Length: 336
Image (tube, rainbow, N blue to C red; front, side):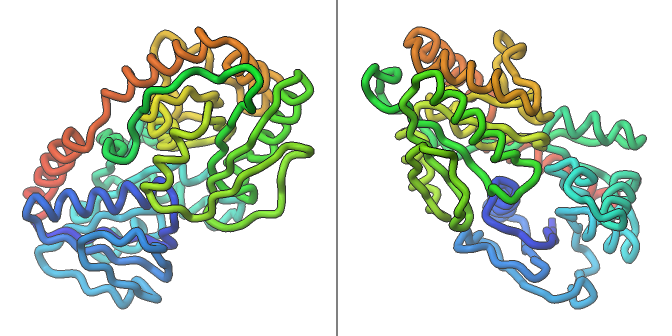
């Protein structure tokens, strides 16, 4: 197959990581793959396929036998309009209408969801969202690199040592709800827990929680990210909406418990026995209380670590490779 992945503003985040992995998988399976990016830099996450940076979709040349995978609503709308819906696959990793406040951008996102072209989504949550727009979709969840994210023999948090909490994502991103994470940590501190906040971000930030020591990691390598996960005691996720929630999977593979909001994508990741433990978005006290129990109760921490490690085995890039190639091949035969 000849396939071109096309998107806008690819940045250092989980969604970009998955796109690059898809491209590399298909390339290694013998297909002709290229990646076209509208006006953005991949910040060193270079795929093994060719990358073309353009300033306009009009400048993208599409081969007669090339299947198009659109990575966002803008590319989906543009290329279905030009090449028809059978030839364009939408790869949806977020509830895109929620990403915007501008009416025109929300309208563009909703328009792309209503297209009748084939669609890949990364979670049951997004499949349900598409169903509300009257469209079906095929679920292909991502995975995480087991050579990067793996557990080490370690103990639960020890008394007398700081409780290390990892928070991932930009303070400025409204859906990440980082201010609520900081509020939960300040509440936890008032309960008497000595906290060390670990922040994993794309660029340096000024905002920090009050009177809590913070260690910053700005745009680290993937190997460094794996080491960061293994160095902390818990991952805190406060997002109001996530298409999947790759950091949760990475934490589970690293043997690290997590505290997460019921943000959509997290429902697919939480072990069945603790699904009720997902926290309502904005419930700062519940977040703090959940962190407190993990900080003071060794058995509780070890239970969540074991459950996460077991649950994480459901995802692998080998499974993704089989399903992705099979699905795209079925679309390719129909399109050409």
